[in-house]
Length: 339
Image (cartoon, rainbow, N blue to C red; front, side, top):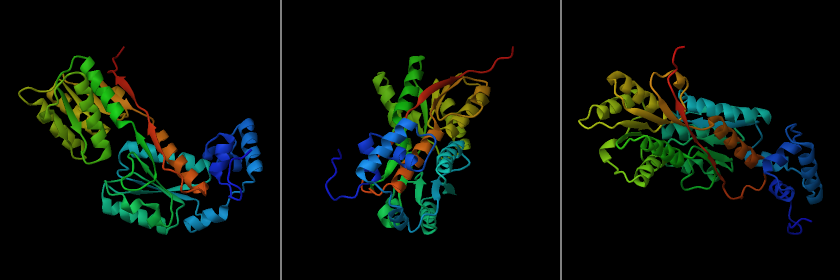
């Protein structure tokens, strides 16, 4: 029996709760998605029948102005493989659900982000996934976008209630630094991101937490913020390695900084160990070992798209915002040896 209040029109979320499945599973079942098992399909359809649910496509169309079959994706740097893989994850799930993706690149510029979001909203996309360029998210409030569903990727929202998907930045950084300490390193240089950004702050926090848990001091001289450029990361790494008392290891907070640090180590012939956040294509071809914090970037995109499609399909737009965290693992690359 349903526990719904008498007279209330059932929503997709009600059906999901009644059938003990996710709203996405309900949506897939109603679209005839072959990935839904016969048993699951029967359960969902039984709940649909008992609750007398009828998908309100008219309400969906009114909320978005009209259904265009398009999803918007706004990222900060398409030249970074991270964002290309994220985009592929979004596109894969969108395509499986009969939708297409429109991609915009901000270059990390907040004004450009505002313009892209406004342009996509005016072109009647059904929803937008945004990798924010900064901490000001006021322009991403669905209330200011005529109810357009919004999902944030890589960081949680500030000052608004929307769904988000993030990487376990703190845990991954903590794990990588702890591994360096376990290998005997006591002075570890940190090539970080901007501390004002969520990702940068969380990865720095994880690094410092590992040092504190190991009883090691946190030396400000070893904690460096690096501009978004591999050449800048190389210059900072060269400065650290050239100090009178250089670190015996470097930890880079993203793949771009890891490449810069690797170049500095190779250029100086330093024996410093290297670890970094984000996987790197062809890292197995490096001449020196490197450890990387890795995770499924495509899964990050898929989960963001899944949350967005659920919001688009579900009339219950007042449901509490959800935060999904993508887990990380630490992977060691060793130089390939001939023979």
